[in-house]
Length: 366
View (cartoon, rainbow, N blue to C red):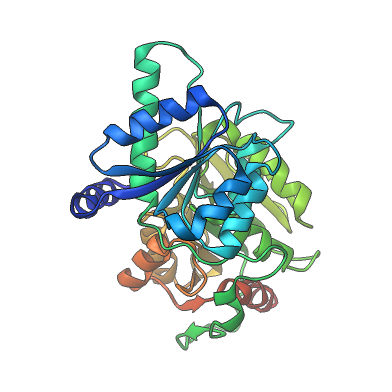
């Protein structure tokens, strides 16, 4: 989810002003460790250290941090609820720092992302100096980069404020062969994607006829659980893709960890080919294969996310005569990927999040 250019930009931006960071952590040992590693990084400064979610909410408007390091297992209100409250009251980029992020009982990664966190890091499990230094570099880089993200207000159980007032669509008239019907839908998402995907998939008909091939950038260790979680909260069947499988109508196919997903001769293919846009799976790899295999019978959708993955793939679909949609800037948590596609001329329609599912329902009936 992090591109080299974005990392370089974050370093340039934070040379002028250090990133104000709030630490929310109840363990004294971990608090001192985080304070030390964040305080020594020239990009960052520790603006506040609090021991509970309730305290974080009390001082949030006074401290006005640029980014928050959030623990999950806190006394009283947990980090999930705290994240939801912060995103509703004063949207601030949040990086969750927690233990056992891959545990099934709490589903920390998915629940944190759904609550509004931008990324999740696991506290170091090893005890060597190298383990801690590696974690320190990952954390500080994530905090610096995520501090640049312009997050939007998220209301629990409701659309975002921006979505509720966003224009219905920005579209380009597209001449089309009326005898051609769409066969498959490709969707790509990154930072902020889980919530967006839930809204879109829940907005489709139960008998939605197109197979959906999905790339969501997520921690490799949690890719299997992500598919299971999405299947639990959405009406369509969400499964992990299998090599050689022929995709079925109304099913959502998610690639296994660290594998590209493509389509060839109407069958799914998985590969460990090199990373594209620093990603595997890559949205561009998926969408390019769909353009090559299905041509004008393809719909491509690019949602919120940092970087540029998916933009060139969306362009391939447009050039093949397929239909392309990007999430509008008014609702995208991070407008990097959709914005890159717009800049390439790859987008036929830019739609706010709540307008995408109705449009897909209409296109699927064409």
